[in-house]
Length: 308
Length: 253
Ligand SMILES: Nc1ncnc2c1ncn2[C@@H]1O[C@H](COP(=O)(O)OP(=O)(O)O)[C@@H](O)[C@H]1O
Ligand SMILES: [Mg+2]
Image 1 (tube, each protein chain N blue to C red):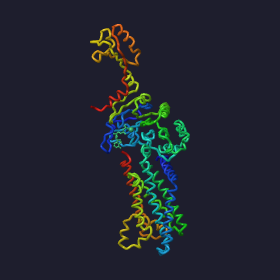
Image 2 (image 1 turned 90 degrees about the vertical axis):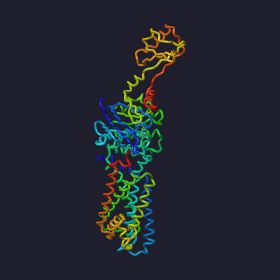
Image 3 (image 1 turned 135 degrees about the vertical axis):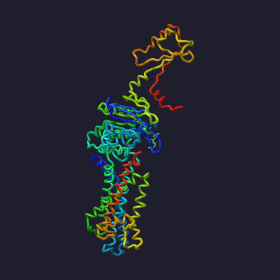
């Protein structure tokens, strides 16, 4: 897979002395949706800001489509659209003017048709002459997205696009993102909502305290997560697992009062039915049972947990 | 050169001016009229001509300069400070524009506005006193040089400022006093010799004197010296802006 953004050894130490990024290496593939997952203060915005040219890196390099972001900043920045985390807009401008301004700023000749398409796709068309300050928060978010799309970027950064956004807008936004991706746009979004990463992304990166601790295909990650545990609470505690049940790989827990069975939800068959009938044949009586799943959330939490 | 970006910034800034047309034009025009009524008509009628020019006419170039200097600074400083304040500067920093293009856009718009304003003031002054311009080309040259220089200066202030009050400090506490003391309302020759020497350290003397020379051919310092000083100030401001952008000072973390 061809990579479109290549980050290597990226380090950022702010003037305060705080190290926000620690030698981050990351390849973003052309055409993918990449979700950067991490708690507040992890360094997500810093990473994006460096790639977009808003913050200077302390060390390391970034290339976009093979161009160095410093030396060839015109080429790399023209390819990128950024929707910032904060709702920063020109309060007194009209929607139409602010979006047209962005297109010009990014070096593209005026194209009212394209601006119209963008505004329509974000349900902003009937607000095109409104001043931005008269819009609701969700509408302002749409304006920021429209600005980022005004110059037809090949790469789109969405920094926590759904923070404080209602369900309707979230759905509309994902619709736009899917369409963009179909047209070949590479999308990098940051979020701390795990479901969002699960739902949208092709690949997921987890960042914590300036370090990228995991980058994985979502499908593979889901496979790892696809394992479930069936816990059987027994009427009478067992000393050992009966030999005839050996093939299930069971473990005893709670001093023999529980049997734990791990199985793959994605597999052909889970083996639960046969296990239960074998247990009955072996005369083992059950008090209760429950299943648990390791979620992305559990992994995430265990990854980013403060060291004790 | 990203011409689309320069145009976008320029138009954006001019639109902002358009929205605040009233404050932008009306208040400087009114204050200039007040100066004419007080100094030109009321007091000026009792002051003898200076080098063959009536007092009312004498103060016109200085008054235009006074507006030009303060307006250039406030326009340009506000223009760049506002996006810094609201955070919309992220877009400017992430856009494929060079620093030169940003400066041309912002400073060009601020300078345009100041020049239009000074022409309006000139026309207003024409209603009070007869005005003749001996060297129109020089007049325009001084006008443009001064406006661009002080718009750049304002741009620098806008980048360095931490709050809106700071934008007002320089025009109010530095430029206005220096313009008053720099020969807006009198010829340097009217001062005692010691003060004449002290006054030569006031940079605005050279700009006001040169500008007045282009009207009436009388000047406190040689017009060549005025021109050289104007060019020096311009170079100085360009150098500072260049350094700010090169280092990313106060713009990028
Ligand atoms: N301009 C700055 N100066 C000093 N520290 C900063 C600055 N910007 C961000 N930080 C710090 O860097 C860390 C990472 O911030 P950020 O990249 O915004 O995190 P995230 O977007 O993942 O929430 C935070 O601890 C934040 O306080
Ligand atoms: Mg952030």
